[in-house]
Image (cartoon, rainbow, N blue to C red):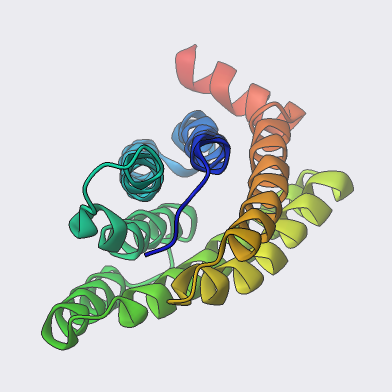
Length: 212
């Protein structure tokens, strides 16, 4: 088992907070622009993604402090991310058949449990993130926010790099620093893009119409 510096473990909470915050910011946007159901799904997604990130970061901090190797915390990451991002994809794209989302999620989690490996959940996570990123990019473009669209694109590119890195069994300290630096930057881009989307003129107008 790798010996993690405490600084590395603590920093791992930063991208978790950025991701959860970004998705939470989309909750109000979803309420106003996509409907109350989408808003609820988005908030549940934020909780699930946040829980997955906290589980992995918590495991790393425990190990860094010479505590026990609580493997279920380590392995909780991708199943919880798969749940969260599948729900977010469903919230953002109402044309996505619910049975397809639910079936894919159940299948990925079931196969992960049977083979005792989280790579099926990781694959679903990447697929769901792709749907979310493309949808968010298009929504940002629809609001004429080119910077936001680019930021969502950067976030998507980062996920394709981070997924395989995070799934590698040989998690050296150097690899962890590279992974976390990339993760912090990409999740920061996502959170900022989500904030821009939630504050766009069309979003503000929709929110005012809902509360009127």
